[in-house]
Amino acid sequence: MSTTPGIPEATGASIRPESLRKERRFPVTDFGASPSGTPGANTAAFNRAMEAAAAAGGGTVVIPGGTFLTYTILLKSNVNLFLEENAVIQAARPVMGQAQAAPSQVVPQQAEPDTLPGEAGDEICNYEEPEINLYAGLQDHGHSYFANSLLYGADLENIMIYGKGLITGGHFDEKTGILEYILQGGDPKDPLRRGDRGHQGEWFGNKGLALVRCRHVVLQDFSLTIGGHFAAITEGCTDLYVDHILIDTTRDAFDIDCCQDVTVRHTTCNSLTDDGLCLKASFGAGIFMPTRNVLIEDCTVSGYDAGSVYAGEYTRDKLVAEDRCGPTGRVKLGTESTCGYHQVTIRRVRFDRSRGFALEAVDCSSLTDILFEDCLLDNISSSPFFIRAGDRGRFPVTGIGSGEELPLKDDVRLEKAEWVLPRRENYRSYPPGRYTPQYNREKDVTVDGYSSFKVVDPEAPVVCNPVNLNPAIPEQERPLYANAVGCARLASVENICIRNVKVTNADPRYPILLMGLTDSHLKNITLENIDVEYRGGLTMEQATEQRDRKSVV
Image 1: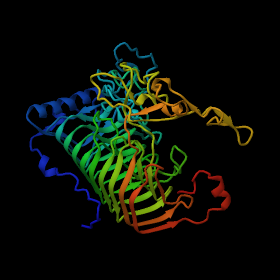
Image 2: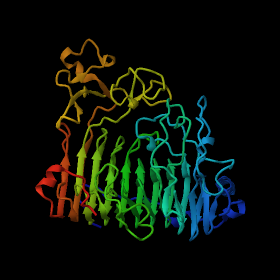
Image 3: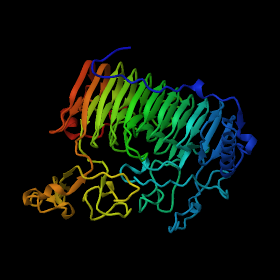
Image 4: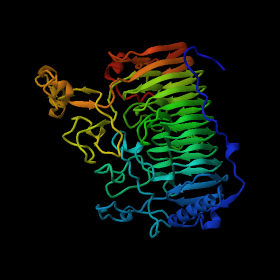
């Protein structure tokens, strides 16, 4: 193994498949599941099998060949899920008008949507209701709620999902030739209060697999397609081993968020419109837990059309992602980075029709000890390497009020007030560590005389927040106290080594970018034996226009 002075390499997970194998089998068909069954009946059967295996002290729930429509499958400790070859777990369309309302909330009446065979009239007609997360608002909705997934487990241990089968959130209509996305890329509406469940009366399935605060987990051999907002997300997990899985989806393929002791090997992640393998460090698990000791080896990330990699076609019908930039599909650390990243080793990964390698520390915590080596990047639609220390200040801060409204108003932040926590006993305390200004972006300007956009008003550039003021603050400094941040330090980036990397066919408008802050410089960054080849043929006019990168095919 190669060594890098000053940068400890990740060792990854200690768990392996052989440690979790269980001989006792519980076929779901013994509990009433059937390829011809309704989603409600199949959901109940799957979960009865899970409960029976758990009650027996552990075992393996077996999915035989065939396609099973279902809603949320609730995983259990010491219970494995085995998908035989040709077994398919397929997401069922929720009957939205029958979704259960949260207390004191009413579900609006809707016309019943079209349904797949057997979906209407089931006792179970939707995915699990999104859970309560007291720390909602500190990260995006998708990182705060997980129960409304196709497969879901929280606070579990010793579980393995394996086999040559398929888990899919899509439905291919053979009559029309259209692939319908049943698991949604968006999220239900944010709750009105942190003590409410994660919706405002209606919800739906929007993740393929979600594991929260689990330990000793193996994911092996299966495929997952059209997985909604996150095809697979592990949140606050420890000792996670992933080997030979394929994820082919519409948004993030695989998110590893505030996890520790993780190995990912021989895995393919395809997503044209979002990230492929994405390491994050949010507060979604409700604990301050840095992402640490992650080993990624011999994987592929790409940005082909959703579903086409699983089908073996690798089609390129769609040229750009939803943000109007080129295909995404990359390896990225960020943007959710509240808890920080430490000791991540990435080697022998192929980037294919994607953006480049991104390291983003923008939420106060540090990003340290990252090794990226022996990788190949081809057809790259952004900077080959992007390293950024920023200051979004997305970090919890305790406010002056005790209410749980989301967001708290008239409190210690004017901007992004959802980052303010109530002053209550059931919340950790994060007193203000520093303050940032609030810029008054209310001045309209135009370039062409027709369209306009807003910029900072030079006559009144900042807005004061009287909540944070006291007589000791000089009057000329008061505009600096608009937004409290619960962390005194700025985000930092240190000890990064990128070496033995070849980049071909890169977009010529995007150089390697390394950006720090005035008060937080990048430190100990090594780029060694790097070969970057940019595409030619771009005219000066095209470079000046910055038109959509539709030349990326």
